[in-house]
Image 1: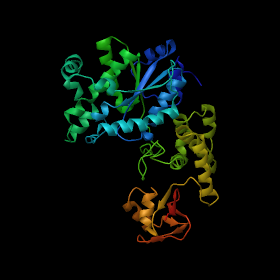
Image 2 (image 1 turned 90 degrees about the horizontal axis):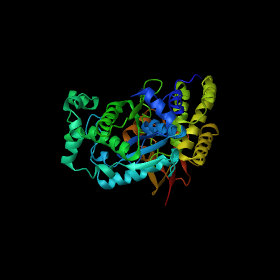
Image 3 (image 1 turned 120 degrees about the vertical axis):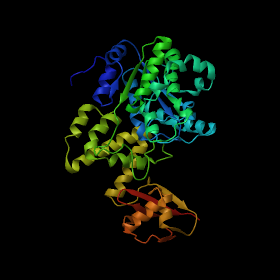
Image 4 (image 1 turned 180 degrees about the vertical axis):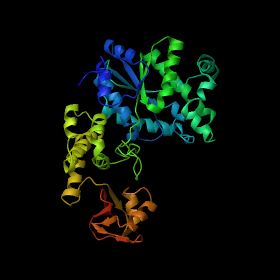
Length: 411
């Protein structure tokens, strides 16, 4: 493969499909040859887990480290109190400090699966931006930082225009978010030698703000790099499913369901997702992309194994694959299926499907039952009032062909 760049970093990002825009392509390419580049991505703590919409950003930090540079994970303990308006039609729900702290603790565990942490020059670090944002004094901040931002330009940002064009409220609190994100970059450049911020394509304006603020106040040359919007082959949103988000934490989504998500991607997405979300060599991926028909299913299993092992460990991936084989290929019940222990003598099929998280709501359960897609031990049930009585054995409940769970009666 012809090398497009001089640095290992940009060649790695380019070859695996991560690059959408770079603020100064040649400048970053030269810097990455000359020194270890500390680079960061910010993650707000709005939930106990990130979902796979954030996975490409996590993988960018992994690639940064693989190329010999230093990943900085910024947890938005401060910015979560404000709420990023980017891509949002309405204001986020305000979280308590306790909720934010709990979410940060939970989310931090995800990164330990993907990055090597420590005190070395290329070891990853996790930093909470509340360390500096909570200490800001309002008037000095307005005087020293706010003067570098014009209302004219701030109103031109898509995140702001979206709300205003739809005549939806944009609070003054949220309006400050882009200034605080820029201040993050300034602080990291000054105190940590950070020279690169990465993010999704919707973060381009915010990243440029940080670069300009850092140049104006500290005269430090900083860079920005964004990824393209990751969609499925049919143009759908990555990770958007009928049953909700594909969470990265095992307590939010089982490794088995995570494995199934990757196993069920579209044929046309297999190679691209291998490049983005696994460490499988590019030459091997090229061979997988030649497969057709039933053979592509083998490549999907390899994709599922690799993605699940990275997020949950080799043992969890092997167990998920074994469970899938038992359920789909051997017709038996696997040990790793989602399960629910009902404390009673009977339960409705609808409630069982909801408790097993086979559906997102009772409404969806009714719809699946009416369509003949709900099964107990392989037998279709079309009565939405069906009651499952304790028969002394565990029962496999299915919602469609790909979602299964184990119902157990506990007394």
